[in-house]
Image (tube, rainbow, N blue to C red):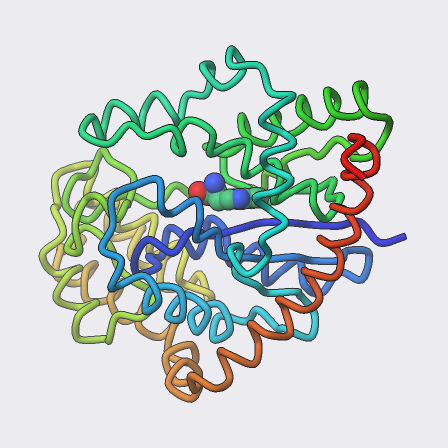
Length: 319
Ligand code: TRP
């Protein structure tokens, strides 16, 4: 039996190079391993827990699908779908809400962080968000969840929920684990001690879809305090496939002879080159292709979700 992998990326804005290196690159790498059955999805319901503009949501979702396809997610190798196309996720979430202790959710550090950051919108959905995430994972009976450090606590909660459900209603779900891969910490261009994040603003991030001109402009304006220069050098290291350019710049840097303009121009070229194929491929992906891919993903995911839910309805005594 193949091991099931489930992971999701929220449709909240343009994908930046930190999102790519931290998540999507791993997904693409995992596609060439025959021991896995992969489900990658767009958790649009999760993205509703933070204020947003409804008129932009469809564009964000479709754009994210085009990004994922152009970056190498292959719908023949992975099931790619949108969470809200599978209504069973919410039904399973309800079941899980009834076995999740309040005290477990009160421990979630991401909830506390987000509640502190968005004081004007601390909604119950934000609080129960990890329970929906447990439903996303366990619906496909996944044991492996590629995720960043910030999601580990949520995956552990999914284990707790699986255990509680199994104890109460009989063994139904496996106990999933987070798959933490070594991911580089990509830092903001404008605040050298912060992680690159959409909330830092457009100028602080390099988006995977930025044109070479935009990349050059953003990098040229990047801060060059001591930490900032280190961050730029780190990025050179990440994007320099040959490693020669990095070695050369590092030597100059150690000798105190590296000029910031040279560092920046070299880095901008490396990043632009790294995503050149991506930009070309993305342009070729039509709306019709996006729709077809999502329909195939929906049909496959839904068939499994319906099976899981039928089993859950019987076990819980609702059928
Ligand atoms: N909460 C995750 C994030 O923001 C996204 C997500 C939702 C997810 N459901 C998931 C990730 C299930 C892995 C598995 O990054």
